[in-house]
Length: 209
Figure (cartoon, rainbow, N blue to C red):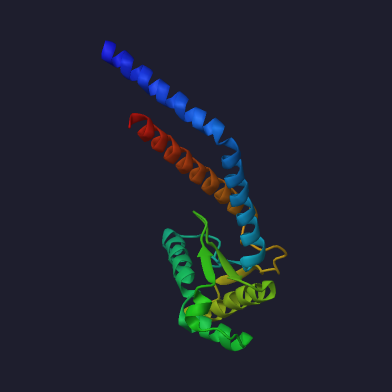
């Protein structure tokens, strides 16, 4: 019991001593954190290339009949999955590159495109991110138009309907200044903690010697 009390008092003493070092180094800590924030701000504003994301939405239509069978619903669900894959296939993107006269390779264009299918829906969001807002808009709309044509050629029926054309983004989607500042703050705090621990350990070692 006495050993436990001694251990607890020793731990408490260490914590108090550590906090003492924090207090003595408070100006150093503040300087490090402020420097990290300034570096994050400068990096975000002057060294990061802004990216713009345009989003178009398509809907996989049901059969025109009023009564929908279970099999018809399943077919529509599978078509939604197939379309999600199709929009980034070469048969679509090569035509997009040709129509827009893009100076991009198939792989380069594919890397700019992402898709999202909200749960329990047959709506697919086609997102295109580039450094030019106009290009992002044009590519997103062209991808939807070409993939609509390809689906028609494959199925012989038009089940893909563009419900929301992409608009020219007014603000960059990245970099995010707030996020980068948060990361800068956390980095500054972490570095400050390491410095305090180092001084604490060094002084303890000198005292023990």
